[in-house]
Length: 201
Image (spheres, rainbow, N blue to C red):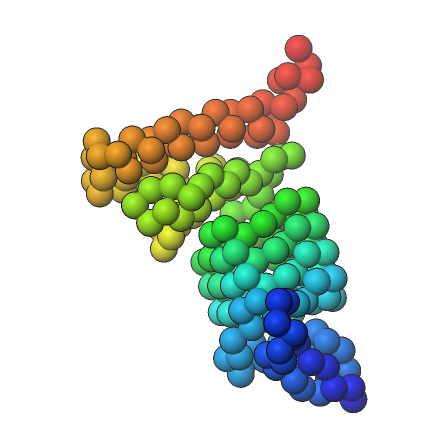
C-alpha cells in the first residue's frame, strides 16, 4: 500500500492524504468520506470507472485525466479544468459543469441523465450571462438538446419556457433568448444528420 497526497493546484497544501494501491483508490476514499477537493491537482490521473458521486471538485485540475466510465452524478465540477480529459461513457447526470474548461475533452457517450452526447461538437458553453452571471451549457444528445443553467437541467424547450416565466422581456430574458437562438443554430449545424446532409451536398 502506498500513501498518496492530493494537493491544491495553487497553494500546494495537502487536501487529503491516504493509503491505497493507486491514486484512484485514494480519490474514491476521499470522495466517499466527503472530503473537500476543490482546487485539487489531479491532472492526468487515472480515474477510470471511479465512483465520484457528489464529489466536491470545483476548480480542480483534471486536465488529461482518464475519467472514462466514472460516476460523476451530482459532482461539483464548477470551474474545473477538464481540458483534454477522457469522459467517455462517464455519468454526468446532475453534475455542475458551470465555468468548467472542457476544451478538447472527449465526452463521447457521456451520460447526462440517460441521454448520450452525439455529433462532433456536442457541447456549447455560453457565459457568463443572465441573472446569476453564470454559464449556460447546452448538450446535443440523442434525446434532443439539453441545457444546464445553475440548478436547471432539462430540454431546450423547458428552459425557454422557464426563461419566459421568470424573466419575460427583461434584460436577462432578452440575453437568454439570444443564447437560446444560438443553441438552436448550433444544434441545427452539428447534429449528425445535419453533418451528413452537408457532406452529401
